[in-house]
Length: 358
Image 1 (cartoon, helix red, strand yellow):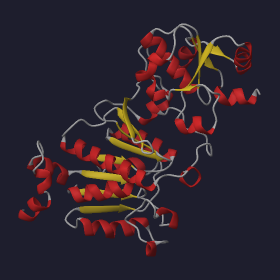
Image 2 (cartoon, one colour; image 1 turned 180 degrees about the vertical axis):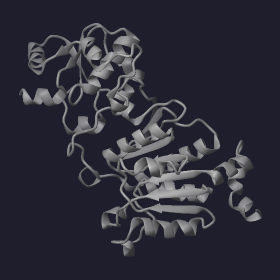
Image 3 (spheres, rainbow, N blue to C red; image 1 turned 30 degrees about the horizontal axis):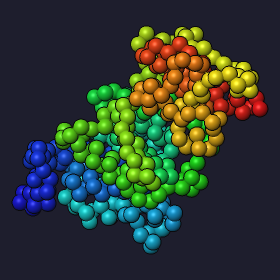
Image 4 (cartoon, rainbow, N blue to C red; image 1 turned 60 degrees about the horizontal axis):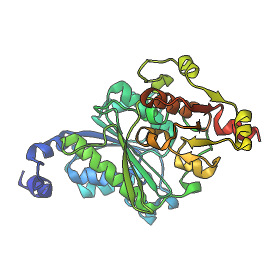
């Protein structure tokens, strides 16, 4: 007991952090999915903080390219199991807690059974299928899900399925087509950004477990480490939920949603641009999509629409687009219902249809 008090004494010296808070950490069962750049700081800080049971799910082996951001690994670990090496390192950080290793790839057959053993799930994966799978499984099991992602110099952290009930799919209703988004090898990522993002994720986990502070429940923290800019946004509730249902005030169906939105075809939009008639183009895709290819519009990602709606004019025609027309339809539905817009048109088929029409 004295050893525990000494180990966690800096926690116990914090205002509002009591022995009960530390006991809640000791009782917590946390699953970390992915033992990569995000998983390393999450695992290190949760182990050091005294989380009672840490589960780790991963099936990869260590590669040379991992070393610049996966700091539990060393050069002579290349080719070995990530789980095995991470476990040995974590045991040296804190041998008094329990570890459970899951050498597997999550799929629809094993996800819910695995997640059901834990109180909190932390998504440190690096692929969209796993993110959507975790979102759906956590929703079904009513398990809070801490999500993190990194791309080049930008990091994002959010908490889904908490008290707000907001979901990953509500923010990203449309999975990107395979091969359309650069991975770390293609797009790159700053090694220390993974450390920063994972540390924030670990902090959110500790706050959620102990009940201290204000968690990112239903909110997303977005930070640009190149310019060191941080901003927090409230996540939307109007995007597609699981099974592509629409969560808007009048409980519209997909067909009803389509009927309430004016559209403009790719050919009509091309003619509008060539006519010189005043209009504004709003792009509601993600920054990485905009960076890859854009039509010169104003970038307002879907999840930022509730906070930035005042940037969208009401006194002339506004065309809103995304990749294929789904996210932009959700944006228009929100703007019409919540802020009374009547000058919006959805680019039919999105940027894909427009570029095909060129």
